[in-house]
Length: 346
Image 1 (cartoon, one colour):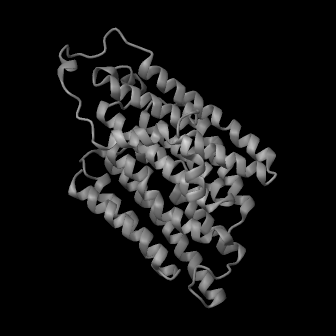
Image 2: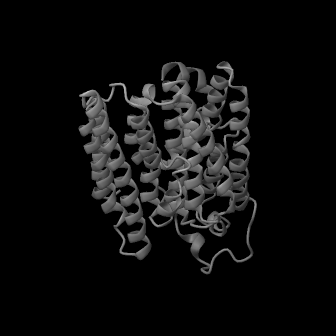
Image 3: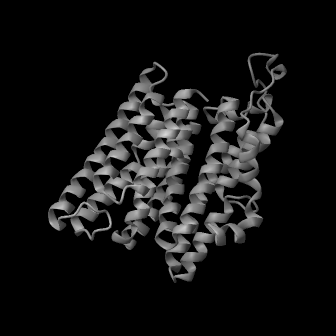
């Protein structure tokens, strides 16, 4: 990875740490989120292309609008309570504005329409960073504010995000857009877990980041940008092809793969708290996700087009797979037997 990407990752990690260690001060939180946004913009604009410029502009406008809403809510809260502390009780209007801002930053439905367009206009590695690392800072803020937000509203937003992320992803053929709607759906599950058990949220987020990292790295290695490209990925490496298929099924939440673990635990928590209707509906929202993941897996391993490539010598080249793929692939497929240990430890 280039030094620019490493600098962005370090900056994002630093801002997330500042949010946690900032004595819960609103201005420092706002400053941290702004630094987090500005750190990713040079990476989005690395390539000189109109679609990249458009994606960077959309990302900047959405993130700064959300940051402005957070600054407005914090100013209103300080005016009403005389304190800039995050943990200070807030009014219903302030809570609503903060909820809107965090939903925009995390691309939670119904504030999710910008997210697929931004990912489609960026490179695979940049889309990976936006889908995983850039979500840590807003999610940390949401974790700190969870006691002051409406639980029913958060559960409704989580269900809506899981539903829309699955249904709207059925109609697309671009792999980055499909993974964007997959991320929206997984964020819905994460928000639902946050309302039930914070430690379960950490486990869900770590699992999501591992699976998404494996999928984006595999797609980047095989240069698969559309569903039609997946049919030719066998020319790169059979092992990479198998890894990609199993990662897709893990993202779908099929047992005995790792992706089944967070969904099982979240549904268990919902049933334990007597939210049977919500748990049933949330489980049914996984079916559209399973449909387009299975379609991608089918195109990946069960189809062999007659003309797979224009170059007859493509199979001779050795695939330059990142060294991170084997480790993340093992974590994506084989962690389910460790569920009791991870659930009790994290």
